[in-house]
Structures are given as C-alpha cells and as structure tokens.
Image (cartoon, rainbow, N blue to C red; front, side, top):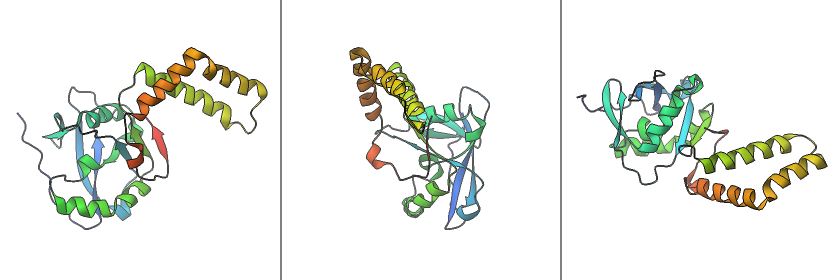
Length: 197
C-alpha cells in the first residue's frame, strides 16, 4: 500500500504546479507534479471540467504516492495520457493544494493568468456516449459547412435536411440537452482557446 501524497508549500508567490502525465497505460493513472514560476512556465495546457459534487474517491499515483481525485478527473487523465500533446497540464483540483485555504486563495488570484498562459484550455465533458457522438457529429458537419467563406445552397440544404428530419432533430436536441447537463457552462472562465476532447 502506498503512502498518501502530501503537498509541499509552493516556494514563490507566483509559482504554480504542473502535472506531467505518464504516457504508459497502466491500470492506475500515474503523474508527477513539479513547481514552476508562472512567468517562465514551460508550454502547458489547462483542463476545465465539472466536479459535479463528486467526491475524490478514485486513486491515482502522484510521484509514487496515492492521490485521491474525482471520477471525472481520473477519466480525463486517462484520456489525456493517450495524446503526447497534453502530457504537461494544469488541473486546479490537483495543482492547487485543496487542503490549504492560504494556497487556494493565492492561486485563485492568479487563475485567470494561469488559464491565459496555457497553450490550450481543454474541456472535459465526460465519457462519450451515443448521444454525445450524435451531437458532436452534427457540430462537426455544421462547422465544416459554415467555415467555408460562402455557403452554397446545396450545402445549406444538406445541413438542414440532416437537422430537420424528425428523428434526427429530436435525437440531436436530446443529445445537446444531455451535454449541457454535464457541466455548469456559466462557471467556466473566459479562455483564449477551447478544445473539446
């Protein structure tokens, strides 16, 4: 049995912790935490996800020790470790010592800057379902058509036919409702770029 991970105090007022996600696929997610100055941080991504009142009842390995995280956080880390572009990441629930109100308050003061300095801000909406696949396929098709400078009549009609069909319209609408229920959109920070995982 591993010992519980214990946070060390940050050395400087404008320091942050970053996560190095281990890319190998083991049963347990493994990460390392390292401290950097926010002004000279290496390239990193930030993750925004919904805690949804979840309790930290999942365990990952952090620097060889046990760290409790929420199911959503663990699922996001499992997904992120598959892509080398997202191996250095900032996640508030892990990078901020949640047990220290002093550290939490100090980090909240610079959180806007933490997000704005990130290369990308990733949003984790949860594991994919058939409904979410339908919604994102529709968004993908719509964005491909709309991203063209000019939308031809034929392209517009094809997109509308895809949406107007009673069954598809109902399925897409239900799918978007399901996705909206996964996260509190109004609580998200303003970010430079959003990438959906």
